[in-house]
Length: 90
Image (cartoon, rainbow, N blue to C red; front, side, top):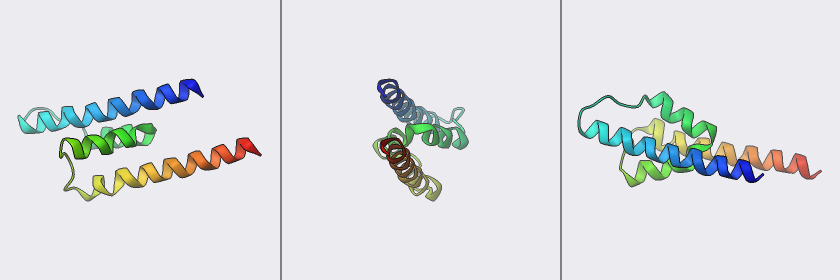
């Protein structure tokens, strides 16, 4: 469990930083991080970091794919965690 929590912290920091880097690159017209990559980071556990980064840096907040997609991923992850946890308790 300890390693899983460390993983979640690290992946959320990475997702947060990815939003920062993509926003900065967008601002200066440079090469961007693919939207697919941002979603993968959210799906593999970085949804909280992605959401915080999205609103902190005001990045992708006008795109429905993101302002709806990231919270849906987070809710799905929470529900999955509850189901897994309940299976281990029984």
